[in-house]
Length: 278
Figure 1: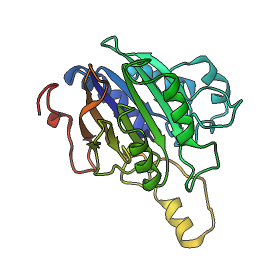
Figure 2 (figure 1 turned 90 degrees about the vertical axis):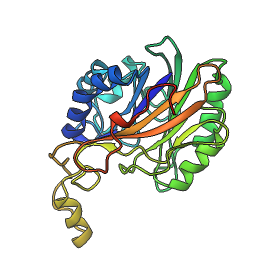
Figure 3 (figure 1 turned 120 degrees about the horizontal axis):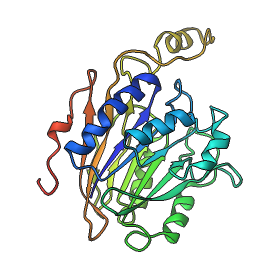
Figure 4 (figure 1 turned 45 degrees about the vertical axis):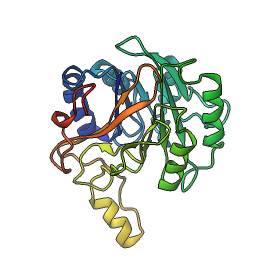
């Protein structure tokens, strides 16, 4: 099977580039399953039910979140209605929603999607390593799920690398989100887990992390907030990871970055080899 993961959607430019391009990508490159991080989709902060539905309609099979999961207060309610919208697994017990879900893809394969959040330079949550470990004990690769993807929403690259190696051979994909900048380390680890420290964002890269640069620069210069952060409004760039997975083992055979848009050096969809080709 072939899985596509898209990094954090930031504001309208991110939503637009995803919704306009995703249906074609799925068809052109025989994508079986799509996961998108949507935690910054609503004006850069959180997600609304309407936006979630738009992403599902465009072809997403699951939408993950992060530290901005509940910035839009309506999410506290509607997340309970949607099995394919998940927040970090290691939020405290009693937090609305859930941190993992099993979804059937286009090929009929069942994919376990797990969302976890790091603790280094982030909020203090339950241990993400133990939380994910417990989830995999309950639904192991090729026992409870045909493939397993972990979106690890974390700041520190060291914590992300540790999670990738901790899960190597037990998950199909471990991909980082949160920093909004794609890393150059997409690869298949020794045990067969596809790994990338950060998938980057889907948004306007002529920005500061997807935000209009004026206010972030002001705060760096003066340390005094002048206004709220607003998403940049230029053309969006698509950024993510494509992973080919062996149906027999559930492990990755290839991991390729995907970038399409005006701002980054290209890793264009046209460069993605057909399934089965090196």
